[in-house]
Length: 254
Image (cartoon, rainbow, N blue to C red; front, side, top):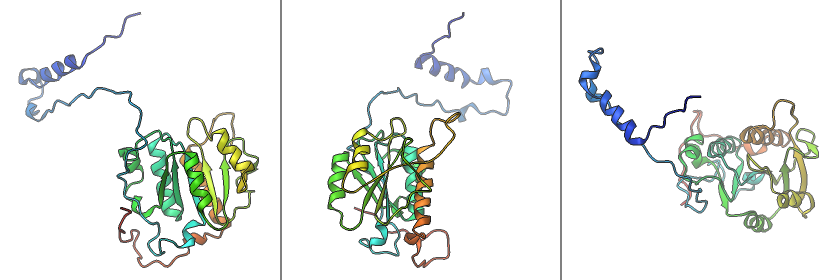
């Protein structure tokens, strides 16, 4: 078996400079070699994402027709525990903006919160999402215990006991999802089963013969809109001042 040749960065740069030579491009008289740019080759690093980086994402107060403390914004909330893929988190943020649902990111995260892929997946909808970042599950628990009113922790897991469409959702439910690789940690599942405010575990049915699991952002979308349907989309029933598809951008959180 022939070995695959290894090309170093210097070899690649030499090849590109050779292509940039006019004598080697005589077969293409209309090609202008001066327009050819030699790309900068960056070295790969195996550094771990810093989950404590200050977010540069513009986040807002949700629907600007509602005051910031309006309980209507707390009808449903999505909690992502240790999400690993920034694109998924960005897509989920966009879903939360469309459904007027708050979003919680619980660390450790598998990406920086100023990751370009995260911002790109959420497009320019970040100012329309209520986002809270918690360093750990314990930190989120402290936040959760301080919240007043009706509330429940609902864990979405592959081995959940109730089917998502058969479950009865209530106002104040927190829909909790785990990471793309490991799912929800055992302590989180235990809290959702046995805590005072634990509501149990829920699963989305699927054919496991061919597919191991659903994409995280797809699962969140299914759960959010089923819960919203049962609540008669109450969080969406707000007056609209614009007939266009894009409302005026609001001032973001500092």
